[in-house]
Length: 134
Image (tube, rainbow, N blue to C red; front, side, top):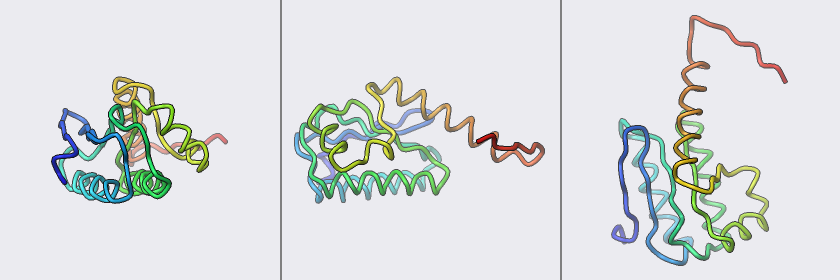
């Protein structure tokens, strides 16, 4: 089953690309396992390239949202890019669009990873204190 996901490691993130048109809960479980292994690597950030995926089931979509949360809890980025209209509609119907970090292209996903890295560096800086302006 590992052959169904291509992994391309870049300098600041790894791109995981499911190579199947349907993302089921079983495939999402494999994807989740691969993504969580990335958290143990020096390059922890993940971009999930969804350009091959045409359909996603509800459980798989929910798992991706939970996975993204796990990444943020581990001070890492998880960005989904190149989502088809069908997949986007599924995320929308499950009210996940507000929770998921989704970009149209891998290049924009990279921009988000970079911004979040800078944000984390600023927030982790012990020598400066920031007040949040809500």
